[in-house]
Image 1 (cartoon, rainbow, N blue to C red):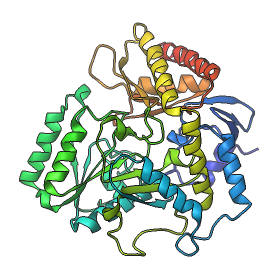
Image 2: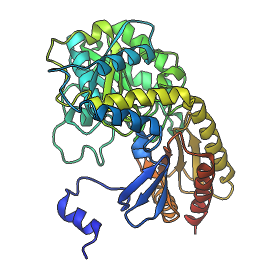
Image 3: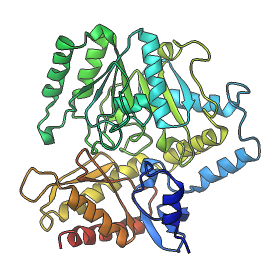
Image 4: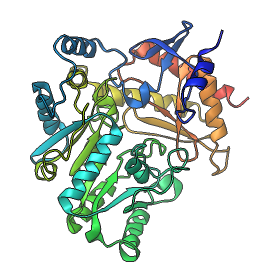
Length: 422
């Protein structure tokens, strides 16, 4: 009999990479069962999508109720009230003490694309500044903004014009806030006048780049520069949003409001929906018809998003994310004496990572990270790697994970760290 993996290889482009060869059959909260009945603890959450867990009852009930009413009309043709209500909720929840408006799309990459379109239209400028190590999607503009060549940009030809990259402030790797700001100053002196820049886009915590948090004070500096030169600040909260960092949005840790905020992933709790929320006058700049999409703000995704926001509030998931992250980092810290490859443990809330180097050196150790991931998978724990060098393991379990399952995962993690050293 032909295996599912063989069938996949014969039917699906190899460009669609797969972290595991697990074929999901069912899932519940923080657990997944494959087609053979094997159980796994999910510390990937669909890459920070099911923050409220697989198939949260409240999310399921909301989607089922919407299924019984209608599934699609295209909001631009026949609009519907729950789209309007969700926009109103996000306008109130996204950081910023100013009037806001929202649009919906389907994916995080679409949200970023639309944020760039809006910024360029409003400012009348073409330039966009982003950061090394950042990830903003796989569309051509998303690729161009992304600061990681492999596997996202290599071989796809010329990137979009007027996109400029700066070093991301990362003191762990020798790049201070002052270094990053000086690089921006040099860019403005040598290649790009600030009056040509529409926006600076930044992840408050880099996702694919390695879960590096923006250092304290950097957001204030960016905000000041944007205000000085008439540029917009775009916060890419696609991976950081919706309680993952211990706040509803990671920008809340910095006391700074972006002009435009992009979001997706955790908003839909497993259903496709994304959004851009921003200053009302900025969001209103494009002409009618300039924004939107056939599936943008699909009614099922909107219904799910309402339920997700209810669950985050009712179950106090921001506070729970903080507690879970503290417990995870304590367990990792306890393993340091036995695992000298551990170079750093970090991350706000429950958006955590461990970085590995060759023991007693500054050399990244992606091989060790890979072995830890593989050992964990053998024991029933799904982990993801990330980072420009692939030497980081990131932890993205559902914030609703039961305490007993969390402790089971921590025991597996301890075993896997030690097994990877053998």
